[in-house]
Picture 1 (tube, rainbow, N blue to C red):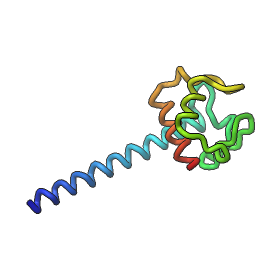
Picture 2: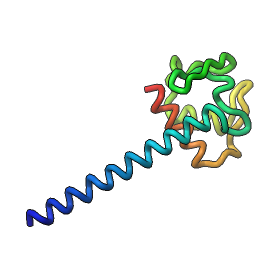
Picture 3: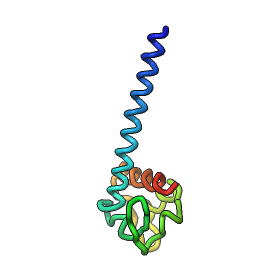
Picture 4: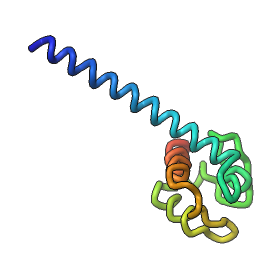
Length: 106
């Protein structure tokens, strides 16, 4: 029984490590998209975000706004004011940007 518990504990720790690595990679992907490769236009051109080292002044300052995931998602899908819609962006990439923004502003 003790060996089974040790094996189960080891398995749980292994899954936690894999998940943490995947989450970190996804956040890095979101950051890269935010800074330079999101289409139709990289977020960094218009938005300030300290974590990304950006100082855009056209759109809201995310460090001050601290938007939640749903607000970011809705705005990316619909666009707002001068901001274009990102509905044609790959969904996984869009979600990576959303997760990164929420993580960087909390």
